[in-house]
Image (cartoon, rainbow, N blue to C red; front, side, top):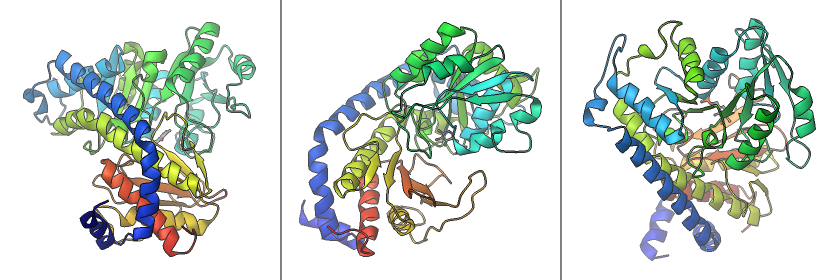
Length: 428
Ligand SMILES: *Cc1c(COP(=O)(O)O)cnc(C)c1O
């Protein structure tokens, strides 16, 4: 590394010892990074083709207000998403406030009293517990007479096919499959494993709706769950598919009927997709989608870099340094609250925004224990931007994700190690 660069890192308070250690690890990752670049290349072309096929033009960036009838930009963006996900339809709206909301709309729009939801992959993401009513919550699906059942993954992470078969009954209407591990230490599901699970379920009950919570998974592989049989695929625009530029929003892509049902829940019965002004946000949503494949590649490189650094220091990391990736989240088990807090301080200190603040654990709504979050983001709470969060509870695992550019992701990870090093929690 040349001396100007070393000086620049030092001016940002990174010790040369930390830098040298991390560079040593990076040398071994060339091939992995090349494979990530090939996936990004394919996905970049997929997005460009979707935009070309739908004749995207600058007229689509115009703002609408009020009811937003005939918002050409909005309708075309939805067609572009449908092309990318190879689905009949998509709902892509700034009125969808976050990923949890997108999932709520997809669930509530497609379920009726007496129906049952089945999760065959264990407990869903924390905020979904309130939505479904696993945890008592005002307005939950449970209050509307929708029940829930769950089959856990087996000890070795495989599907409990017998358990799933036994759990499917006459009332089972929708199967929810969470691709990413979220705040758990189970493995993330690959698109092909999701495909096997869906094939098994459809073989028993072809009419059941298979919905995938695709949060953090978009563009990590060249295929999406809708390419593997999912009827609905749901996610947040302030994660992968917004490419860091979307300031708000969520998407639901899938079968026309199910997307329409979701639209009637998002707006109103009878109105559905026809209303919803985009207020001038279309250009950011298009451009964010355009950038998303390379942004996801940067985040993935960061995750793999972090996995290899912390694994080499003796920490347990999920996924490990060499296994294949199906989402952008990296879990590092740091074994103590002090180390978790130091890690998050380092991520914060490397940020372009709010680098001078110190993150602290707090009782965040929707989560069951105190959570610490480090994020110096342009879009508030965006987790496609470099961010780290951790529930303050054993085994003291920190979940790290994002990075709009690889160089920022790399710097953030090195700073996380810097803080552990400064506080004498690791020796190099
Ligand atoms: C982030 C996430 C959600 C919820 O999204 P929010 O935008 O935080 O509401 C749901 N499921 C998974 C797997 C997620 O990662």
